[in-house]
Image (cartoon, rainbow, N blue to C red):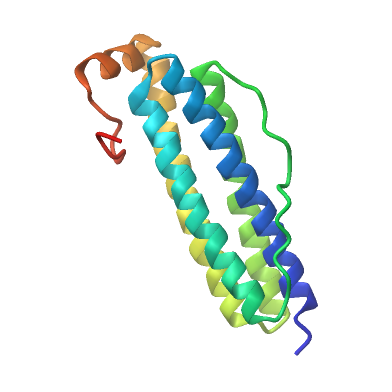
Length: 165
């Protein structure tokens, strides 16, 4: 079996995950600096999950005897307004899920069931990230930025975010 196509698709995923990790940590730093700790922690937590995705992709590439290309798909966008951050990451998560769906289909066409399954698993994870970001965005639209400020004063964290980091 020629693994070239699968390795290419997996490395596209690596680039996307690197982009997400860097972007989400950039947002974490700025939100934490603005005093929006709970939302900042959500970005940090999801960046860590994206690191796990990167590791899975790299392991598969190496199993297929390829080389992991550690180049992010795009540069970090310098967005510092919380609502704009959420709008952008929802777009990125949707695009990522779409790309992983496409990669799963291509992997199946290339008779690479293991890569197909990995991409399908990543689709589900990215959709979960989208849902968590959307809930925060919906709350900001409903309550305004005071939603974030009030969370920060009472030490509350968004649903699913690790507290105390």
